[in-house]
Length: 219
Figure (cartoon, rainbow, N blue to C red):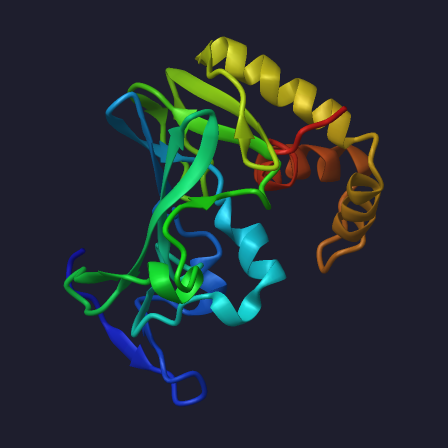
Protein backbone atom coordinates (compact mmCIF):
# COMPACT_ATOMS: atom_id res chain seq x y z
CA UNK A 1 0.00 0.00 0.00
CA UNK A 2 1.43 3.35 -1.02
CA UNK A 3 1.61 6.21 1.44
CA UNK A 4 -1.44 8.47 1.39
CA UNK A 5 -2.85 11.32 3.37
CA UNK A 6 -3.96 10.31 6.87
CA UNK A 7 -6.89 12.02 8.61
CA UNK A 8 -7.16 11.53 12.38
CA UNK A 9 -10.58 10.79 13.85
CA UNK A 10 -10.91 11.87 17.45
CA UNK A 11 -14.36 10.34 17.69
CA UNK A 12 -13.24 6.81 16.87
CA UNK A 13 -9.54 6.86 17.64
CA UNK A 14 -8.88 5.49 14.14
CA UNK A 15 -7.05 6.91 11.15
CA UNK A 16 -8.70 7.07 7.76
CA UNK A 17 -6.66 6.84 4.57
CA UNK A 18 -7.44 9.10 1.65
CA UNK A 19 -11.06 9.99 0.93
CA UNK A 20 -14.06 10.68 3.10
CA UNK A 21 -16.64 8.00 3.80
CA UNK A 22 -18.87 9.32 1.02
CA UNK A 23 -16.13 9.01 -1.58
CA UNK A 24 -15.04 5.64 -0.23
CA UNK A 25 -18.40 4.10 -1.07
CA UNK A 26 -17.35 4.17 -4.72
CA UNK A 27 -13.85 2.82 -4.11
CA UNK A 28 -12.79 -0.61 -5.35
CA UNK A 29 -12.42 -2.87 -2.33
CA UNK A 30 -9.56 -5.17 -1.34
CA UNK A 31 -11.08 -8.66 -1.18
CA UNK A 32 -11.06 -11.40 1.37
CA UNK A 33 -9.08 -14.48 0.30
CA UNK A 34 -9.66 -18.22 0.02
CA UNK A 35 -7.31 -21.16 -0.54
CA UNK A 36 -8.46 -23.95 -2.86
CA UNK A 37 -6.26 -26.94 -3.73
CA UNK A 38 -3.13 -25.08 -2.70
CA UNK A 39 -3.88 -21.89 -4.64
CA UNK A 40 -5.05 -18.56 -3.24
CA UNK A 41 -7.99 -16.74 -4.83
CA UNK A 42 -9.80 -13.47 -4.18
CA UNK A 43 -13.38 -13.58 -2.91
CA UNK A 44 -16.16 -11.34 -4.24
CA UNK A 45 -18.12 -11.73 -1.01
CA UNK A 46 -17.29 -11.10 2.66
CA UNK A 47 -18.48 -14.12 4.70
CA UNK A 48 -17.39 -12.63 8.05
CA UNK A 49 -19.80 -9.71 7.83
CA UNK A 50 -22.75 -11.87 8.92
CA UNK A 51 -20.69 -13.08 11.90
CA UNK A 52 -19.82 -9.53 12.98
CA UNK A 53 -23.45 -8.45 12.61
CA UNK A 54 -24.30 -11.18 15.14
CA UNK A 55 -21.22 -10.45 17.30
CA UNK A 56 -20.42 -6.73 16.92
CA UNK A 57 -18.13 -6.63 19.96
CA UNK A 58 -15.77 -9.09 18.23
CA UNK A 59 -15.14 -6.95 15.16
CA UNK A 60 -11.43 -6.05 15.38
CA UNK A 61 -10.52 -2.38 15.61
CA UNK A 62 -7.53 -1.60 13.39
CA UNK A 63 -5.27 1.39 13.97
CA UNK A 64 -5.68 2.24 10.29
CA UNK A 65 -8.79 2.10 8.08
CA UNK A 66 -8.20 2.26 4.33
CA UNK A 67 -10.87 3.37 1.88
CA UNK A 68 -9.96 0.21 -0.05
CA UNK A 69 -10.68 -1.90 3.07
CA UNK A 70 -13.65 -0.03 4.47
CA UNK A 71 -14.86 -3.01 6.54
CA UNK A 72 -11.60 -2.70 8.52
CA UNK A 73 -10.10 -6.16 7.97
CA UNK A 74 -9.22 -8.78 5.35
CA UNK A 75 -10.29 -12.35 6.15
CA UNK A 76 -8.59 -15.53 4.92
CA UNK A 77 -10.50 -18.77 4.35
CA UNK A 78 -9.98 -22.32 3.13
CA UNK A 79 -12.18 -25.25 2.14
CA UNK A 80 -11.16 -28.16 4.35
CA UNK A 81 -13.01 -31.47 4.72
CA UNK A 82 -16.00 -29.99 2.93
CA UNK A 83 -16.25 -27.00 5.26
CA UNK A 84 -15.58 -23.27 4.93
CA UNK A 85 -12.89 -22.52 7.53
CA UNK A 86 -11.57 -19.14 8.69
CA UNK A 87 -7.75 -19.27 8.73
CA UNK A 88 -6.93 -15.65 9.63
CA UNK A 89 -8.28 -12.13 10.07
CA UNK A 90 -5.81 -9.36 9.20
CA UNK A 91 -5.92 -5.66 10.13
CA UNK A 92 -3.68 -2.78 9.10
CA UNK A 93 -1.15 -1.35 11.55
CA UNK A 94 0.44 1.49 9.55
CA UNK A 95 0.06 3.55 6.38
CA UNK A 96 2.70 1.49 4.56
CA UNK A 97 0.47 -1.61 4.60
CA UNK A 98 1.81 -3.33 7.71
CA UNK A 99 -0.58 -5.92 9.13
CA UNK A 100 -1.20 -8.08 12.15
CA UNK A 101 -3.48 -11.01 12.91
CA UNK A 102 -6.71 -10.22 14.76
CA UNK A 103 -7.88 -13.84 14.79
CA UNK A 104 -7.98 -14.08 18.57
CA UNK A 105 -10.03 -10.89 18.83
CA UNK A 106 -12.61 -12.21 16.40
CA UNK A 107 -12.63 -15.79 17.74
CA UNK A 108 -11.17 -15.82 21.27
CA UNK A 109 -9.51 -19.12 22.13
CA UNK A 110 -10.72 -20.94 19.01
CA UNK A 111 -8.37 -23.42 17.32
CA UNK A 112 -10.52 -24.25 14.27
CA UNK A 113 -13.27 -21.93 13.06
CA UNK A 114 -15.93 -23.28 10.70
CA UNK A 115 -18.10 -20.52 9.22
CA UNK A 116 -21.38 -22.03 10.44
CA UNK A 117 -23.04 -18.58 10.34
CA UNK A 118 -22.57 -18.31 6.57
CA UNK A 119 -25.08 -19.57 4.02
CA UNK A 120 -24.62 -18.33 0.47
CA UNK A 121 -22.51 -18.48 -2.67
CA UNK A 122 -18.77 -17.94 -2.59
CA UNK A 123 -17.95 -15.98 -5.75
CA UNK A 124 -14.35 -16.39 -6.90
CA UNK A 125 -12.74 -14.78 -9.99
CA UNK A 126 -10.59 -17.32 -11.83
CA UNK A 127 -8.55 -15.76 -14.62
CA UNK A 128 -7.78 -12.37 -16.07
CA UNK A 129 -9.89 -9.30 -15.43
CA UNK A 130 -11.67 -8.22 -18.61
CA UNK A 131 -13.38 -5.06 -17.32
CA UNK A 132 -12.43 -2.96 -14.30
CA UNK A 133 -15.17 -1.25 -12.30
CA UNK A 134 -13.96 1.16 -9.60
CA UNK A 135 -16.74 0.33 -7.17
CA UNK A 136 -16.98 -2.52 -4.70
CA UNK A 137 -16.55 -5.87 -6.47
CA UNK A 138 -18.03 -4.84 -9.79
CA UNK A 139 -15.09 -5.79 -12.04
CA UNK A 140 -15.61 -8.64 -14.56
CA UNK A 141 -13.37 -11.67 -15.20
CA UNK A 142 -13.00 -14.29 -17.91
CA UNK A 143 -13.86 -17.22 -15.59
CA UNK A 144 -15.29 -17.80 -12.13
CA UNK A 145 -15.61 -20.45 -9.44
CA UNK A 146 -18.88 -20.60 -7.50
CA UNK A 147 -19.22 -22.63 -4.29
CA UNK A 148 -22.56 -22.96 -2.52
CA UNK A 149 -22.26 -23.02 1.28
CA UNK A 150 -24.98 -23.90 3.78
CA UNK A 151 -24.21 -23.22 7.45
CA UNK A 152 -20.50 -23.68 6.72
CA UNK A 153 -20.86 -26.90 4.68
CA UNK A 154 -19.40 -26.39 1.20
CA UNK A 155 -20.67 -28.03 -1.99
CA UNK A 156 -18.39 -28.97 -4.87
CA UNK A 157 -16.97 -25.96 -6.77
CA UNK A 158 -18.62 -25.01 -10.06
CA UNK A 159 -16.42 -23.68 -12.86
CA UNK A 160 -18.17 -20.98 -14.91
CA UNK A 161 -17.12 -19.10 -18.02
CA UNK A 162 -17.72 -15.37 -18.16
CA UNK A 163 -20.85 -16.02 -20.24
CA UNK A 164 -22.09 -18.68 -17.81
CA UNK A 165 -21.48 -16.32 -14.90
CA UNK A 166 -23.47 -13.56 -16.63
CA UNK A 167 -26.39 -16.02 -16.98
CA UNK A 168 -25.98 -17.01 -13.32
CA UNK A 169 -26.05 -13.36 -12.30
CA UNK A 170 -29.23 -12.76 -14.29
CA UNK A 171 -30.95 -15.82 -12.73
CA UNK A 172 -29.91 -14.62 -9.25
CA UNK A 173 -31.38 -11.20 -9.95
CA UNK A 174 -34.64 -12.66 -11.21
CA UNK A 175 -34.93 -14.66 -7.97
CA UNK A 176 -34.07 -11.53 -5.96
CA UNK A 177 -36.88 -9.64 -7.71
CA UNK A 178 -39.38 -12.02 -6.10
CA UNK A 179 -38.33 -11.02 -2.56
CA UNK A 180 -39.59 -8.35 -0.19
CA UNK A 181 -36.00 -7.07 0.05
CA UNK A 182 -36.04 -6.24 -3.66
CA UNK A 183 -39.42 -4.52 -3.54
CA UNK A 184 -38.24 -2.41 -0.62
CA UNK A 185 -34.95 -1.52 -2.37
CA UNK A 186 -36.79 -0.66 -5.59
CA UNK A 187 -39.15 1.68 -3.77
CA UNK A 188 -36.29 3.39 -1.96
CA UNK A 189 -34.30 3.77 -5.19
CA UNK A 190 -37.23 5.21 -7.12
CA UNK A 191 -37.96 7.72 -4.34
CA UNK A 192 -34.39 8.82 -3.60
CA UNK A 193 -32.84 12.26 -3.91
CA UNK A 194 -32.84 11.81 -7.68
CA UNK A 195 -36.07 9.91 -8.41
CA UNK A 196 -35.83 7.17 -11.05
CA UNK A 197 -38.35 5.39 -13.21
CA UNK A 198 -39.05 1.77 -12.36
CA UNK A 199 -36.90 0.56 -15.28
CA UNK A 200 -33.97 2.80 -14.34
CA UNK A 201 -34.18 1.77 -10.68
CA UNK A 202 -34.20 -1.92 -11.66
CA UNK A 203 -31.17 -1.39 -13.88
CA UNK A 204 -29.39 0.45 -11.05
CA UNK A 205 -30.07 -2.37 -8.58
CA UNK A 206 -28.84 -4.97 -11.08
CA UNK A 207 -25.62 -3.07 -11.80
CA UNK A 208 -24.73 -1.70 -8.37
CA UNK A 209 -26.72 -3.81 -5.91
CA UNK A 210 -25.14 -7.16 -6.75
CA UNK A 211 -24.04 -7.62 -3.13
CA UNK A 212 -27.74 -7.97 -2.26
CA UNK A 213 -28.39 -10.92 -4.54
CA UNK A 214 -25.29 -12.55 -6.03
CA UNK A 215 -24.17 -14.44 -2.95
CA UNK A 216 -27.63 -15.50 -1.76
CA UNK A 217 -28.94 -19.05 -1.98
CA UNK A 218 -32.47 -18.96 -3.39
CA UNK A 219 -34.66 -22.03 -2.90
